[in-house]
Length: 436
Image (cartoon, rainbow, N blue to C red; front, side, top):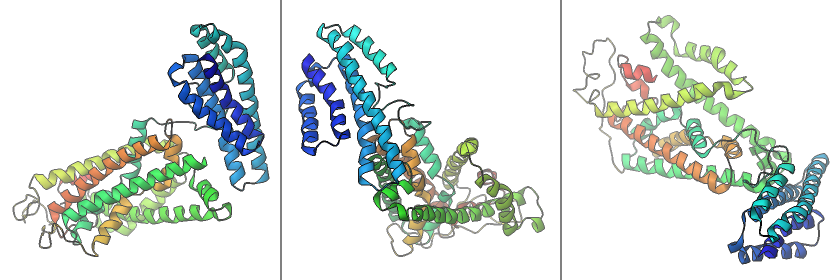
């Protein structure tokens, strides 16, 4: 058992040496095959020190294989290829020294069945060679790593926070265009599942290529000469989304400022949009480090949750009920009256080309894929399985939130639901003002 363990551990790093020296493939395959065979033959007799060496050996193997794979398969500048090779050479030398150290110090203690002493030696070796035996990689200083990592829970929250935004305000209007509410619910679920799946594919692509942004992914899969296209497309998409959100801000701020007594002459929608864009959005867009916006980002997500809860409450409390609701009758203590709810075209299963409006609104509400590589890079112990789990949970939460606000808003106002549902609520409704 000791011989098998020793052979199993040492051969993993030797295999990386073979690959480094570009030995014919059949030798590499034979060695890697022997790893698999030995792994099955001695799986029942691992001891703690053996497992620690095995983890470290795998770390070396990963650090050698991945850069060389990218170096061989994809065209890179000569200087960059040389740098990758130099880094791999360093890892190769460290791996060889690690093997010699294991032969000299660890093997005798294993042969004498002194597992406690061997564990101490392994820990000392890991400290000397800067190896993290609890993970699949070299700790900072031996390989490039993310400066920060997020736990599964934190990543789920950050993704939901990133995706959920003012796009939720448009969903009810998509249903009001003529889509049956059951069909709308199915579309919400299907597009949520599709968005979740395509988001996980981004993480899998990052895992397979080792790249950490879309430009790198494009360069590896399509070509570096045209990599500028993906940056251009993301810029155009983000610019278009910004135009949409600026319009929403104009819709929200105009009645909000009117409710605090700002004169109509100074409270035009166009004027507000220009002022917000110039004095708020432009300076924020020029910030290099977005960590300063962490608090406002969290506050924004809390606002989305509040809005969902508010829309649901108003759909259930009867204050906007047709003909009897507090805010839809003529005498509401204000000179402003809102449009009466209407359900003439209400349907359960209707589906026609008008459903494309809802599909477009859902597409905007689910979009955050341009940040996919960032979420994969920052996820703790990132791998496709972990990343997929995180993404599916986050998009499941989003789908539930969207379904609630979409149907609650539609069942409140029906056919007259506006593109920004907050515009349907009466200015004297304090809960709606807080939502704005």
